Length: 423
Image (cartoon, rainbow, N blue to C red; front, side, top):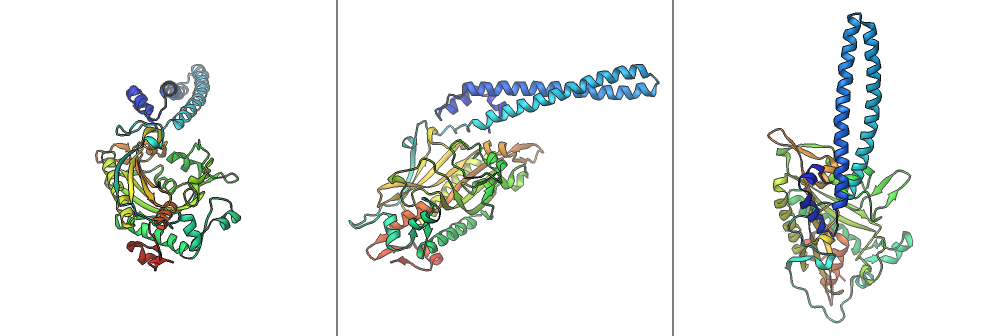
């Protein structure tokens, strides 16, 4: 969430930054500043009124002690008027604050200066590529055909039970899922991330805290009777562990990892590009989350990018890293790097991870602060990344490692799967 004082002091810079997202934010920012000015003026008047009321209350007490009943009665009438006035001011302050909050919830984060301008994913900037794309023979199959051939995933059975986008993993397919989850968690904990297990449903305050709510794109599943939301990513419950928290500076950085299923409606997703595992409504993902000192958050982002790159390399998968342009940047992110694995059988790149720095945007919504050695309380920076999302990793593993005798399992995974080939 943007900070009104920052917007006021750096108005032109904020407008230029949001322009990278192709948003003309100037009119909305002026409304924001007007509401903030009204809120501050109302708060000042309320404080003054309450101070006057307190002073008169003390004066009334003194007058009664002195036997000046008539003067005390007059002062009581004045006090009653001030109380009425203060109640009106409190109601006004509450309403203005609500309007201000609604405007703030609609405004996205300001992109980092390194974010390129652009309208869509076609304008993202490739910054790194590693690994050779394997040459497959003419009989090579896409992952949905391999899954059927080796009885790894049953898409039709999942559709029968729930609907499209809810696959059933069977046999070695189920074991591969479990192996990947355990391997990713072990890889993350070995790098210093503490493992946590978190709820798969969150309340509205949690969704607001990390920026998934208000849900402008209708992507979250809502359990209406209980007013709870199925999580779209472990980022939501893990980051919210520190909502309304004050951390000591020497406790930073906080590094956490978690496995959860993820639920996304993916409204409007149709066509061949979402076939098989390319896009699902329910999928497994292992996440890494960091809470960082503001001066160290971009070094932390580089460290996380390097971590995810090593994880992909260990799976013998060709991948590339993209710096997202303003038009493709997530609502809460200041800077995001996407990792894509090449799907050889589909002849296209598939996103498998996003690693983002949110700077203080989420922390402001979460009221997540740290206390410095100087005693001052400041907003922390939050970061998160997929390490990794399973569906497209599985697609890449099946397609890129297929050979005439079956699908070969990367060496790093064999201790987790208990087999080195699917045939």
